[in-house]
Image (cartoon, rainbow, N blue to C red; front, side, top):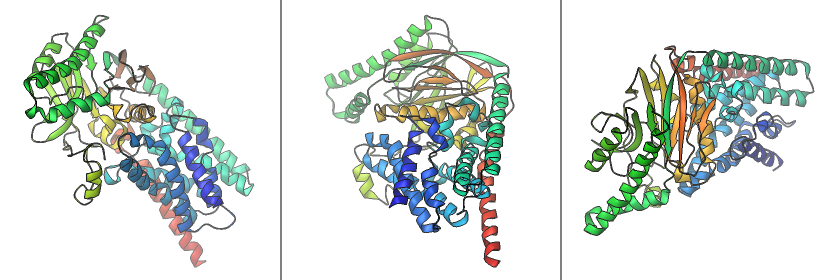
Length: 511
């Protein structure tokens, strides 16, 4: 019971590293209670290690993704139970193959943690939310190596420092671990400072952007959708009321854009996900978007549904009017938000969520960037949570100037920590790929960051607001190591560590 409580404490300490608390100092101590159970005097078996890791994972995920309850408790519980398997496997590996507090085992534990985070981001469509390296987002100099090793790779030095310090305390052999920790921190900080300075010095073209946060309550969106679903049975008066309410929201976007343009021209105007109530190819939208296109020679980016051979959540970029539009159909769908896994195999889940998600969205296939007539700058379009999926975003990267644009509607989750967590998670994409990122979110967080992850602008959450920002887009065509090779560092290091551990165990058994 003592070990289980310590494991749960580690999970809660890790949760404290992320919003709403965001206490980054906890990053340097959070695994110690769990390690106390794994590296105790009485050897911990693989099964007991699994249990300890699972309890720690549950304490972490039930806390940090509790905002999913705002949508449905089934998704929150099911996802937490699944995600907790990863720290459980990690703890089992540590207990079985690296069960003593040594420097070598500290390095192996760090490598396995990073490898399992990489797996978590790809298995079953992937959910890499709140990787350990994401909690480093406020410490800008420590996240710069992500352009080489990705956000998952940042877990390696962080976990190594934690495990090495605990191993030194446990074994009371301080000299070598302290030297190793000091060299790790010095190399990590020095590399980060150099990479950040190098990225900031790349010649850039400044783009003037206007980003709209309309702050439409999710309840109102649901009300309008409910009216639309029975549109065929509406009286003429009710239909006119629906069109009037939709037009009011459309006018809100147009007026906000027009007002912002009075302060100066813009290259780019961005509206959030699902900001247009009607599907894209409708006469209502055609007239409205042609009207907006007359406001100036800017590229307009927005999110809406597209019905053409399927039902897609999409990001549209147009310049001048409705007919001059490019469409990106969302590829990486959100589980329990845009589709239900095993809908046919587990009908009881479908029944629980029938009102929320009666049918699934279709998945797009193209990962081509959107060409926007922005003098050679192309857009990497991401919708909703796609900007927190690094392996997905890197597929859009081309050897040319690019800007990551995210349209989101985090209003589903009301006033919870989800919005700040989303901000922290997506911020790493700009560093990994050295492409600046702009997000327009319905209720927040609307922001812009540079190619080093530096905050360029952000507006207040849960408020109708407009962000005017100048974004420097690097003109270099060089691709980062991460853009070219992805998570090869985390995956390879974890695989090598596992191989070495198995060989060492086999040698010890023969001896």
